[in-house]
Length: 118
Image 1 (cartoon, helix red, strand yellow):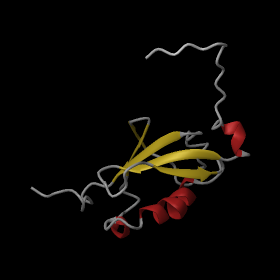
Image 2: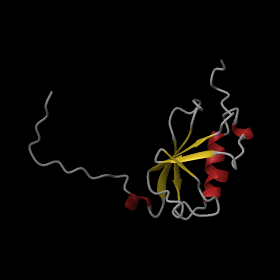
Image 3: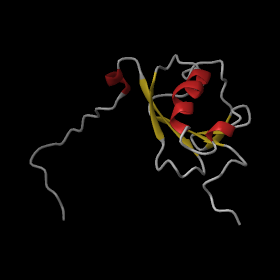
Image 4: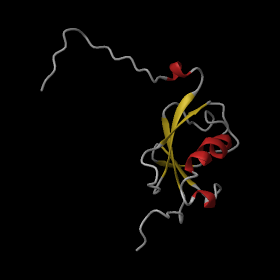
């Protein structure tokens, strides 16, 4: 059913980076680990080192998965904007090009305990 507006509608996004007092939102998802139905939403500082994000909130969030303790973070395959990507663990999120509302994905080949085996 069509909708007719009586005046011009101006949408004001409430999730712009200006509204987060210097922090930003970053989505992170673990490919082929369906225990998590959606990407994690991390509230982080752009100056946070990538390794701090992994060692802190990301490791904590994946703990319920049976594979979490076996993840070798030096062998993880990363994707950003659906493209293979190699983050610098010693650099900040901003220096790695991870901005507000970006999604990063990671894959752990061989660790897929919740998938059915053939």
